[in-house]
Image (tube, rainbow, N blue to C red; front, side, top):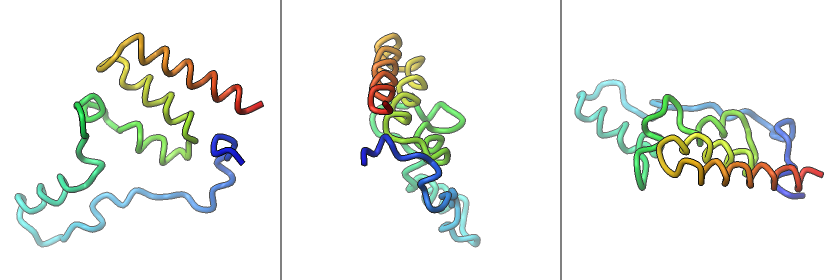
Length: 104
């Protein structure tokens, strides 16, 4: 079965964000900052176009159990204002066309 044909109801459990779960309570502010900065969700490699947002596309897609093509389209649309403009919109459209093709 293609990964793009997997529907949310096929997932066994909903994953919950555990932000801060592994951070000790009795620590200094500097240590807190160091531990938070160590989380992958708090940094971005190669630019800052997602760090400017209230929620990163990866977290949105994960929490909403989107498949790969759905997630790619969300990422392209979200970053288009900050990165590649019309090129990212065209990539999103192409990705959605692939989703339609594979969904048949």
